[in-house]
Image (cartoon, rainbow, N blue to C red; front, side):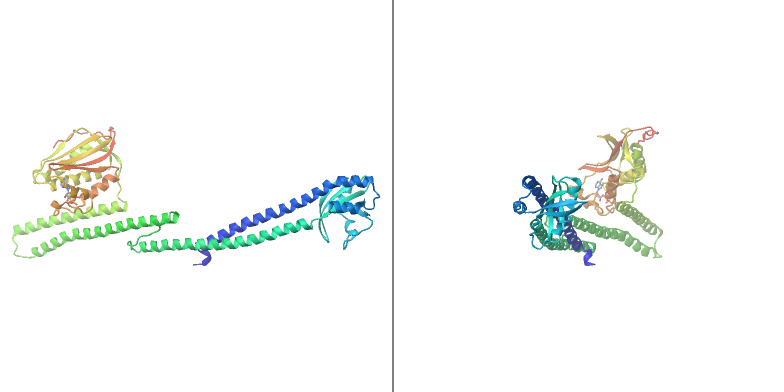
Length: 473
Ligand SMILES: Nc1ncnc2c1ncn2[C@@H]1O[C@H](COP(=O)(O)OP(=O)(O)OP(=O)(O)O)[C@@H](O)[C@H]1O
Ligand SMILES: [Mg+2]
């Protein structure tokens, strides 16, 4: 990876950029304002001193020491200029004594020219060969004469320059520090991220055994904990998937093995007709079992993939339950299960009629298969607490607490009933009920087991009202 494209490099560059921006702004704001404040203060001093100077000069215009005294008291050059056609010429002091500076420097002074032109006090800064000056020019009583006070700004500006230098130095140090801290923090951050990346790769590779650990309380710690929750969940799903495949193949192998055995037996030409018939009946039973298993597995895979579509519409439960009872009457008779439908009046629930029927079939089949012959089985519907229920009640021996805990797990079969089904019926019923916003409830004790499909209730309308008479079986 390009080192400049790493999170670490980007973060440290961002920190560096922000610090540089802040320093630049401070530099651009502080230095000019400091400079203008110092210049203003100097100009104010000069403007303040001018009144006394003008008064003194006008009282004694011929005092030979006036200019040197005034220069000493104001700490500025005090010059009288005569401005003719905007071009100032020196009037006084006649004894020009400033070493290295020419009187000519002042002959074209712009502040003096402006003051002569506007006839009022003017102030400003002027750059000369020997430095920068703060100047105040005052028009005098005699026409065309201007008194100019010019204070060198050398000291003030050297203060500003010093501040400027220190700011630059502090800025450089701050940038260096920002770079170091930013880089260090970014490296630490990147290390954490790489640890998470390795953990993600591990999980993606199917290795769920190593926990993703991070005890920190910040967002990265949260992310690591979320990764670990994901790892645990995926490990569970992976385990369930392996178990499912193992169970499914086992369930498929048993009837296939048995079918293979019967096929070999059927090849025996000396088999009498009744034995051959018996073998064929058993084989048909195994094929039915395989078909049911294939249907159940298909339903489960659709449920897992979220591809099993259920309608949510008003369903009239009474006629639906009665139809299921009719359907199972033929199965119940040989095993001598008295199967009854108890009519309680019309009840409407919300769900998918086909799926509701599928669930009732699963419950009814269980009640007939997992109870001894002669056990009474009863189906009824009712509306209670805003719910619509179809209940399948049997008078069998009941389900023990151990089985109850795992009854709705896939491939789980109660101890006493291991030989019959595949243990998928209740798992499918539960998932289907939940998909319709309902649930399966179980109430069991010796002599009475009740499985109830609970659905959201629906008000009976003309559409859901059954047209025919309630069925009695
Ligand atoms: N009415 C019942 N009375 C007693 N035991 C029951 C009853 N209904 C279910 N069971 C127990 O619950 C277990 C799980 O039922 P489930 O319908 O999921 O599987 P199955 O009936 O064994 O097989 P499948 O329905 O896939 O053919 C059964 O094996 C049985 O032990
Ligand atoms: Mg079953």
